[in-house]
Length: 411
Ligand code: RNT
Ligand code: ZN
Image 1 (cartoon, helix red, strand yellow):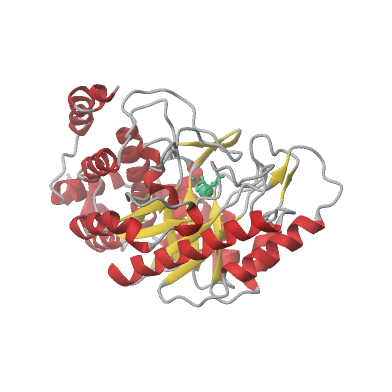
Image 2 (tube, rainbow, N blue to C red):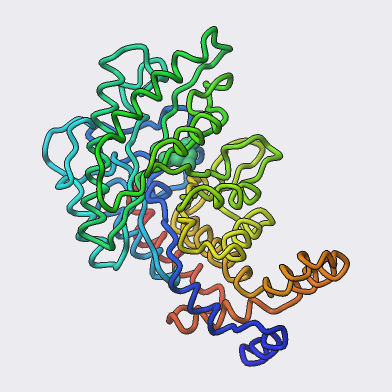
C-alpha cells in the first residue's frame, strides 16, 4: 500500500521519502507536565495555582522523578522521530534545600543525564505559579519590590539552567517565560503593572547567554484573573520586538475565541528569526485539552511547512489532561502534531503557491481540496514501521498493560 501511495504522490511531484526524512528530523518539544498534572518535585508541592488548572483524577500520576522519567521513556517508545523534553523549574531533582530563586544548573543534572541517554534536547521554563511568593496573583509586575526581585532572581537563574542545557546537549534551549499576573476585576490602573513588568523583564534579560532562545508568552485571561492580564499579546509582542534575542511564544489557547495562531505565524516570520509555539487545544476557553488532529492543527503545520520555517518555528506542546491515561495523552497528542506535519509535507505547496500568484483561484480551490484525498495515512504507517513501531492500534493495548502493571500500583 505504501508503494501505491508513493506512486500516487509522485504523480503530483511529491516525494514521500523526502517527507518522511524531514518529519523524522523535525523535533517536537514534549511538555513534561502532562505526566504529573503540572505538580513538579518541590518539597510539599501539591496543588496547581496561578490561573491554570488541571482537571480529572485518572489514576497513575507520576509522583517522583523516577516515575516521570519511566513514563516518558515508555511514551517515547511509541513516538517516532526527533524529540525534546520541555521542563519546568519546579521539576528539579535535588536533595539541596533551595527556594526557586536559588535554583542551579546542577539541580537538573538528572535531567541532563536522562536527555543524553534518550537523545533529547531540553527546553526550560521558569515556574512563576503555585508558590507563596505569587502575591495577589502578581509576580514580576507586583507593586512589592521584594516580590518582583524574588521572581527576577528566579528567572535569571532559570535562564542559566537553560544555558547549561544548551551547552551540555544540542546547542540550544528555549527558555519560555509565562507569568499569571492579572486581576479578577476591572483594574483602575492598567499601566503601572505593565511598566513594572517591562522593568522586571529588562533585568531578567540583561545577561547575554549563549544558546538560550528566550521567549515571552502572552495570554488573554486566567481562571480567577478574568478581567486583565498584564502580559497581553500587544505588550509582549512589542517587548520581544524591541529586545534583541527575546521572542514571542504563541500558545494556541491564548487568544480570543475566533483568533487562530496559524494566521499569526506568517506575520511573525516577517520580523522574527524564531517563533516558539505552545500547541494545545482550547475548548471554549484556554482549557489545555490534548491536541487532536483538527483543522487548526493542520493549518498550523501547513503554515510552518509551506513557509519553509521548520527550523524557525520551534514546536512545543502544552496540554494537561488528568481525566485520561497520561501516557496515551502524550502519545496521541504528539503523534497528532507529527501527523499534521506529515500531511503538510505531503501537499503540493509549490503548485498551490503558483496558482495563487497567478490569481487562478478556481484551480487553487479545486486543487487544494484534491490534496485532501491523497493517502497520507499510508506514508505515516510506513514511517512507524521503519521506526520499529506497530502500524496498528496495538500500542494502545501496551499502554493498558502498563497502566495495569505499573500505574495502578501507584495509588
Ligand atoms: C499557561 C501557559 C503556560 C503553562 C505551562 C505549564 O496559561 O500556557 O505555558 O501552561 O507553562
Ligand atoms: Zn502555554
